Every structure is written in structure tokens, then in C-alpha cells.
Length: 180
Figure 1 (spheres, rainbow, N blue to C red):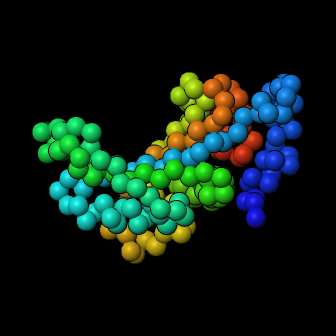
Figure 2 (figure 1 turned 60 degrees about the vertical axis):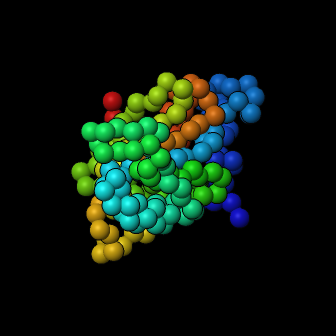
């Protein structure tokens, strides 16, 4: 069973994007390849149990298993040693990716207080990063079971290397960009 957003993309958005971007071939139409959720946990340096709680929350948000990320080099001033677990990451593709994007765009982001849109800045290669300051915007989380509210980085990788095409793609999916 296809997710709602994937079905809309294949049936409606692909043709609209091809016409608006003036692409000759339907295969040139940009698409989302993957979404990566990343959380850095500085508290994990002193207490390793914190990381497991963060991992559990990310797994609830994403709907799939997360992996721990490890420090690549030691930094003495942060009491950080090479190989210490310092974060959690999950890569979403296909069905989970579209389900997450649907929840992010239509449920989570509009529930942010005083929300006036996300930044329009892309990274120059067609990928988009958005930082979330509080993961409690996702409705599947139980506020009473959380020890601390944390932020996360969401990276949306697209198949195009052109920022204007990537912007058109995310705008078609309903990403609430800030008015310029």
C-alpha cells in the first residue's frame, strides 16, 4: 500500500512539476531520495543511559530502527574520547520517508507556536536542512514520559542538484516556507 503523499506525487505532482520546470523528460522531474533525522546528545558524554532514551524517541518518531553515532576524534575540553557514542541517526526511505514528511508538513510544523514558516535556504546542491528546537511537536510522543525536550536536524535529500528545482519540489509537497 502506497503512502498518501507518494500517491499524490506520482499521480499529480510529477506532471505539474514537469510543466512548471519545463523539463522534456518525465524522468528529469526531481524526487525526494531520503530523509535523515539526526540528534546530537552532549549529555551522553557523562551519562550513557541518556542516549538509549533518545534512541527510543527517535524510533517512535521515525517508525524504524535508529543507530548510534560515534565521535571521530577526541576533544579534551569537552571530555570526549574517540569512539564514544554521542548521537542518534536514522535514514528514512520510500514508505517511511513519505509518511514522515506528511506528518512533518501537515501536523508537526503547523503545531509550533508562533510559526511563520521555515527558512528558504538550501545547501547549493538541492538538499534541504531544517532544525527542530523541540521534538515534542510530534503528536506520537507522550510528554509525561520524556525526561528532557531536545532538538533535531532533518535533512531532505533530493535527486536534483539545482536549488530552484528542489524548492519547487518541496513547495509542491506543501512545505510551509517563510514568505520572502
